[in-house]
Image (cartoon, rainbow, N blue to C red):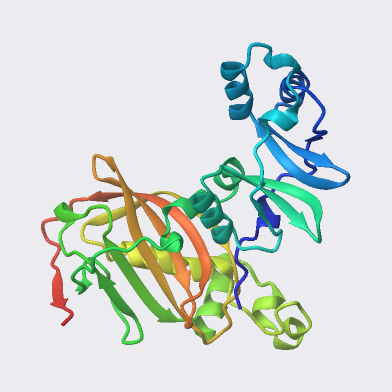
Length: 307
């Protein structure tokens, strides 16, 4: 079970509207008064166009008397729309395909919101770093690796696309998998103090929206730290942002996937940090910034290439 980010989660509402017979001067005044950069044009309760700051600038450039020009003459039409229940990644694809920076959100023929790239950036900046928009990449070599970890369990698996700290670069990927066990949940409850019955009491949890006990979200997100800890070098957290999309039940196997998407400099990297369930669905999305230091001289690394 997963809960992807929907358009309804990020859209702006209520929407500022204007009539087609209003003028460019009227729209400019509305922009200034409301602190916005677009108005949706509505006639007889139907969306017929949209006017953005770009449209107003274009009108100033092309008309000798732009102030009196009606919005019908400058608005963009037809309007790119989406549904409030649409997944955010699908809305972004629509923006990309139609080359627009905002979509009018319509439900059952009625205007309910407006979603723009600014809304997306405020709510979920990690969306722009993911492969959700079907960006193909060349396969890279994969390795099993063990670095400075104190111990490993046979249930745990780890893969990485590089074995050298000096060769870490954009596109490198690390994965760590394990099963979230009963012992994990109960130990985490004691260690963290989070003894919410949702995690510990089956009869109680059965009456919640999940219908079963689920693992602590921060316990599941801890697999991200496990993956990063096994990158070549000494990985140090600088920041971590997370969005929790779905639950993980006790006994489920999960995989943390960390991909370097930017190099800030001085061995500092930006990464997308996701956790997937056994079906490959994202249950956590995030972004992290880490430093990767040189390991101590006494550190040893065992490496086994994957065929």
